Image 1 (cartoon, rainbow, N blue to C red):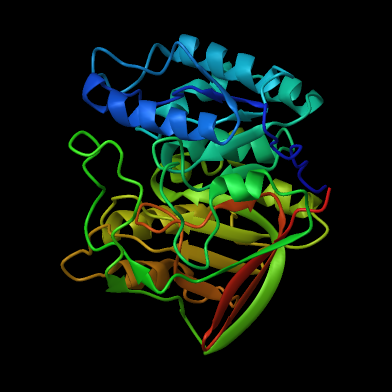
Image 2 (spheres, rainbow, N blue to C red):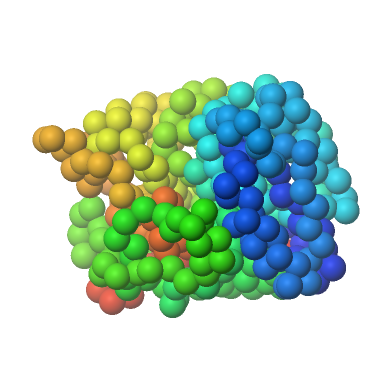
Length: 342
């Protein structure tokens, strides 16, 4: 069963900002204000949730019940066209028992946008409620101009449908994130290091299927639970899926163990290919991040593409999870095309 795409965002639509995981501490409120102003200049109404501006600088924006209640209320509200957290966090997993995925399955989808810990709630929304979600960027990233070949998340969400193609970035950021406290208005990414995609095996590959996945560190604990039944979802699809995964900060040993666990839970049993996001996460003393992927997935007998432009290192490619996706890697041809026909 194909995932249901939200209606295109249009000027005048309401975008809600809430933090299902980590909130925004006072020193970063100016950056949040800049991002909200950016959305308003694009013609959108913006409403802020109660679970957002965190005066206590805690690792979550509010209690799990409060965060779940606010997220549910916004997702089911027919007047809300998109829900976009400021960023991810650490323990969004605690919301899952409080979310009514059966009710969400009965509702028309809105755009739910984000990456990192936000994929903890994005994945079951696709698997259990049939919503397509938008992986990549978030509110705090919204002011950035996209790198050449990549789209802005608003370009995807405002698309009227049809095919959208993005091509691999030529350069990436060398270090961590910009200092939003020192420069809250930054809107240009500093991309200085050459980058490109590569295949774990072979020199070319082309494959297609519905896209599913997210952040390795937050999704691997869900493997084998009702909230991450990727094998069951894959059996219901007309075509085998493409699995998208990226490491936030776990070292190579942690990533290898997580990928092995996901494989044992059946995540790759019926996949047509795997996309691994580029990462700045550390290698281990005897194992690199690429070797971690090879250790767990090297004998899958499907294409595995490394260093794709999504995850925790700029630039980041917005991709619709649940959408029909075609991947092509052959020499200078490195592109992803998604069909957003409704």
